[in-house]
Image 1 (tube, rainbow, N blue to C red):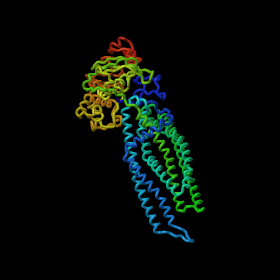
Image 2: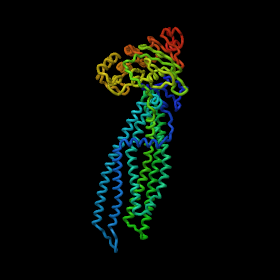
Image 3: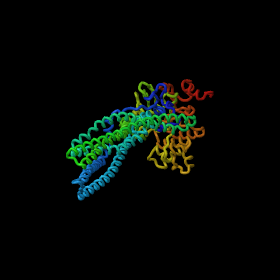
Image 4: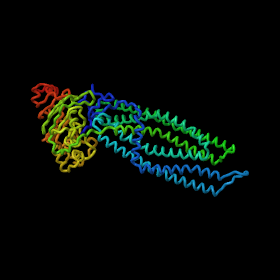
Length: 633
């Protein structure tokens, strides 16, 4: 369904909602085909609902690239082993130098051997580190590729009500910013964590090998490090969550301002738009500063603890050697090197905490969408769309977008195949809600809708929507050729069928005047065409779909009289031999409807032809008189 909003979109216009009574979770009306909140909606930071669950889901995505993950771990094991050997050979090289009888003695042969071994070790480490970076990059991109694909697949399967009830910019932010944060964490933090743990274990065992006393002295700082990391982590956590939510809000703000640019300028609200953007941007700035400040505190503290540990080991090692213990200068140097390798991983893990928090916050927002139940599709019947005749029956329809706030209250309506039915009523009466239910965009609270005697819940959603074409007031065109935009109605159509559809829709004349004709590339939203031309392309698309049921939402209300006549003729061509439901705002366009249905307070208030309803002087008469005040009826 084409549900792109116009710049001055009114979420209560023709959607069955009452702004006074209908409130979303942020106190603003979501409504069908509308956005919840807006640029001023305040976003409150929330703690992760289940960090463990998020981590497990993230690990499943990493597990999809098992070979890369195994290769990464194996290479890092080798790198760690090679790096751990470095200080050992440094110690052996230093201890080839001795001082006896007032003179230095050097075992040059052994020294050369140790130095050559160290050179080979560091060359191997360099090559393997490069390979580690390549594998980590592949693992990262494979993971986020899979995650991004799954997220997009989920977005196209979730109910329309979810899209309507969430800010579009925030959903886009989850697809882009949040996935990118996860990518960074996988590329950097995962390798750092694995490497740090392996190095930590290796360094600790080597320290035990050299001196268990110095090894015990080295681990004194670990409890302090864990305590400080935990305390700072809690402070950072809330700010990183808030940052992600504010970033989603900022994206929504920008999207709305770009889409509604003409309206903003027309009403001279540029300064107001800047002010609203600045408010959200300022909140993001403050949250970012707070998170970065606390994150930057972590590094210096960890470095201080590492240096403190270094001093303790140097002092104790020297003391042991002076007192005749089994300790050489080379051994002390090796212990100091291993102490660095022991403390450095802890510092690295602490420094990566901020990145991990950002990634977890993003992953949780991604999985929130993935956990949304798919659109309900109970249809099990195999129905040939071409066999549908177009008889429609609404039986005792009850529906509300919010519990205990009904929009439709026992509505009943029968439409015969080929009939042209106009649905009218005041704003908020439920006109658009009727067609939203017919197309299966929302699920009924009570009642049933039948097409040719078959409940639409028994028809597969894909088949149901193939049988129905929708032409909206606000057309949606893609940044592609005219040919592709028309063929969106039937991707398997030939070029000849596509051109015939354009002729029936009265669009071929203006298309053939374009330099590249059907290969003309449209700008975003068809901005390089007039409103009338865009509407004719929308009708062409519907003609090519060849629907059994047609839904029209006041397709001519935004064009001039001459264009309206042309579109009107195109609509007549389109409605031939099709069941047509017309949501009417301009009552002058529906005088020739077979039946006019007036919806009021969620039920069919009155029904009849144009002349019959005027003669009744009821609700339709009042609506008509308001639009044509002073005109004889």
